Image (cartoon, rainbow, N blue to C red; front, side):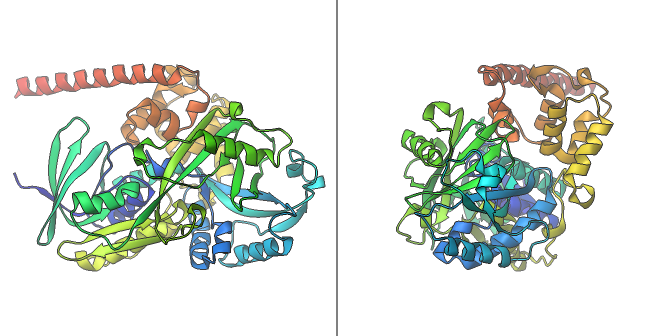
Length: 514
């Protein structure tokens, strides 16, 4: 049988891969994206969840990277106001660390390297009379406040994949690219699903957005050498019960010249991170080490009245950042910028090295622009002003949208209404249509998790496992009972078994009818 030919085949379902697939599909190119696991299964769901310029990168003179990231902050905040929103950060001044004048100069640059319309600028603050000073130890009297943004990182990946699909892309998860062979103007590719079935397709261009596996894909699958190297750096985070009641986040300076963040998280928790540790193992098996957990607890405890102990940690996660190897002396100073390597010796292969979540849209725009002349496509860039699924709210005003939702669905418990609005934005209408009370949402599988939402996640968002639902499509894993994941796993097993039986019955009926 003749193989299907795509314009672009993207390998990798992290933020860069889905961003490229979305941009390319929106320019009229036929796109197939394959991901070996779930969307955002690895690095893209293990970030500090910030849309930020990277204040600390100014110390390494990365002015171009910081400016590019600062320009993207407000573009992204407008595109999905349900999963991204402004966040004010408080930096207590430790006199033994960076001088106050140096911090003021850095914040002045941070305020003015790119135009701001949504985010307010920085200022000094007297922590003795500010809500953010109350949880801190005595001695931290002065500080600085500045702006950045927050993002539900895994949901950002899923929304980009949905938008790619709605522009015509085909997205296949749990499917590995095991062979890629050049043949003149085409790549011939073998894809293997997790059940072992194989599919052969062809593409005019191949995009390697495999993240931590980018170099392995170039060498072992495509069989082509690379000009760039990556440096795997592990970043770990801990989650503890809420340490403060206000809505500010903190940036803490530490004696080792590193910084950590302490951020309000999922209403009842505080997120603390991150570490920067060289990593040599399998990226799929990365775990936070006890030394990292101890480090984060110790550094947070330098600032908070309430001491943070390893026993307080209710969840921890770790990801491997595939950073562009710039031969920096330590992991913390490795550049977060990206490089696009285009091999044109036959059908093009574009490989993505490095990058950070804040610059994914710009990276995707540049990547597709590099490929366009080779594919005979001259469509204009379009993503800078396009909302992501669920983000099409008037004036990108989430609070007005939330107020409307509570008016339209007064029967929804307040926290559930807020979670639906934050997670799905306007798309929550897909599974609330016709519902008048909680019973209309179907079985409550776990506290706060109803069948209507699970149906939506399976049908629209590629969810297949309990971890997909509890830890990536949501963070309900923090709130459900200890056996919640096992309960949901059993429920999903029965769900998919029933669906398979129904499909087989329909197929048999069709054959008998024929």
